[in-house]
Amino acid sequence: MIYTGTASWRLLKPIQAQFPGEGTHLARYARRLPAVEVNSSFYRHHRRTQYAKWASEVSEDFRFAVKLPRWLSHDQRLRGHEGLDDFLEEVHGLGDRLGPLLVQLPPSLDFEEEEVGGFLEALREHFDGGVVCEPRHSGWFDGRADELLARFSVSRAAADPPPVAGADEPGGWGGRVYLRLHGRPQRFYSAYTDAFLDQLAGNLPSRAGHAETWCIFNNTASEAGIENALALHGRLTS
Image 1 (cartoon, rainbow, N blue to C red):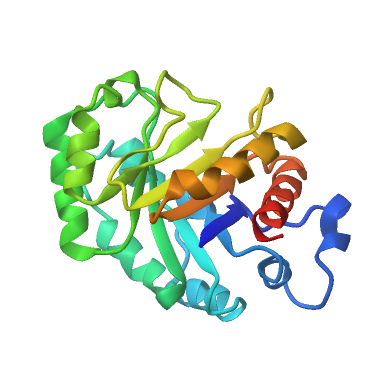
Image 2: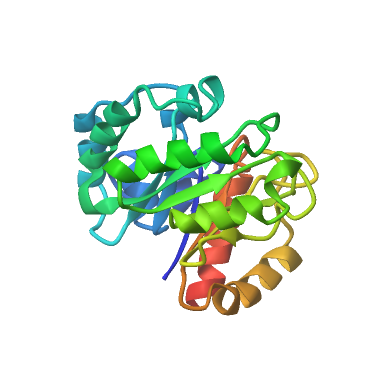
């Protein structure tokens, strides 16, 4: 299974006709795509009942990736885990539709083995599900971080465009491949070309091997992300 989706299920007017039927934007989105990434959790709490409501609107095969709150990744910079238990309690409202947690790190956060290891140990004491890390500092790409991530069964996301050399290739634990495509040349707005999507559709299955694979389009400031996700999913399932 390759989980293709976007970093939002908001259906902008230009593409709403491609998601027919009744129901919320999420329910309509989930009838056409198999996964979504919840980014609003980065900025604010959602009650467990809200996550449960979202889970009730999708099929049993649909999956949600959920972004770790900024107060853990950016404010505490992985040096503490205050509020982690509350967050985990909330996201478990998704039940078996919960996919991996996404830990996106600020570009200024260098790899500090003791602090990162301490945070991941605390996380793994309370959560045995999927975890993906998206670092954006060059200090995470000399091999040391990948060894530590693999030790805790944490995959490193591949990002496009890459913020530093090596960031466009997955790393860490090999049991999950997670691509985050932010749009190019203009991040968050630009659509990927048909040639890019053709190449991606050809490479993803062999690149993934037996690993669970996610491809999330984060160029959702325009309708480009949804269009790209639909086009890629169509290529993969045709």
